Length: 108
Image (cartoon, rainbow, N blue to C red; front, side, top):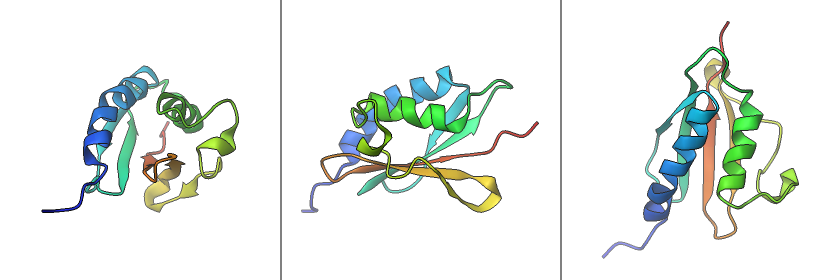
């Protein structure tokens, strides 16, 4: 028998995270195994998609890891810049799980 992992928890969170992404003008997709962290990619979908940090803060509030101060759940407010201009944030949850969210750049 395999050890338990966070996959069921991550799967149950997706609907709420997807709703936040859509309200902010993004499509949200899952990337990765979902064992230790939840790898997500947000893709700007409409012209007036919000700034990425707004999306990240809304998602952090949904999963209960932010109570008004950025250091409570977002590892760093400044994103890590990834290939192709992708920005990523790590949202740490108190139970050892994390959301690793990449946001694709908006192109005018």
